[in-house]
Amino acid sequence: MKRVALWILAYLCLSSCLIAPAIGQDYPVKPIRIIVAFSPGASTDILARAVAQRFTEVFGHTVIVENRAAGGGGTVGTAFAAKAPADGYTLLMANNSTHAVAPHLYKNPGYDAIRDFAPVSLVGWIPLILVMHPSLPVRDVKGLIALAHSRPGQLLFSSSGTGTSLHLAGELFRSMAKIDIVHVPYKGAGPGVIDLVGGQVQLAFVSIPTALSFIKQQRLRALGVTTAKRTALFPELPTIAEAALPGYELPNWVGLLAPASTPPEIVSRLNAEIARWMTQADTRQKMLALGVDAGGGTAASFAETISRGHAVMGKTIQRAGFKVE
Image 1 (cartoon, one colour):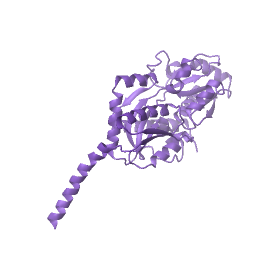
Image 2: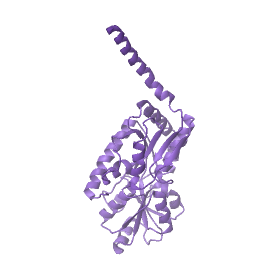
Image 3: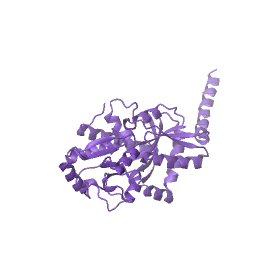
């Protein structure tokens, strides 16, 4: 009996080894959906649709983008994705707002940014850019700060929602510049930018992809970027730190995640496809044209990016005293 038991145990171990690779090799066998916790037109949505198109081409199955923009700094859609079946058929295109900012701003965001997800791949780094309506009589960051000092409480800045990176960028700007500007939250970056172009609000921090066409049409004026270094897309545009506020920095990433406990073979398959795609010169050029520094890399390195950003933004938010109930 002992010998039979050993044979059964050996068989089960061998079977699991043989089945595990098959999970990744057979995947996918049906359509995939990518959840975006923000409105259509936002940078996260734009990149999600690019990834969906790529996956559709290489997998031969439809990959759709499902927008679940219900405010809350992206927490509603993110919480929905966290609770989805961990089978690789529901993914999340997340960003700095959902995984580094909102968890520290909201008492109960509905998910744990670290434990509830399996990082798949970094898709890109997106510098945020300070833009304003061209009717304002200033042309640089120092001029805007001076104008805000002369008009306390009169200048409005839009964001993609309370608790998002765009909101936090504006709050840090207000705090460091010691100015009184009023936050106007929207359900997504797109609607906020439309009102900015229309003059209903005067300034905003947005991703370059969201504002790029309006900047080229001179319907918005770009003043500076939130990153520590200048972006290759606008090399003449200073960082906010060098333009007026030394020490100002707020990086922004976008990446693909799956619910926790998704089979590692599926995560590896998805990661490999993104990594292969990101190494193509044409892909990197198209990403740059959108104002995105192409991502890629391992799932482990992406996990480190998330953890590091989560810790840094937690300290920043605590220091600034921001909190949303």
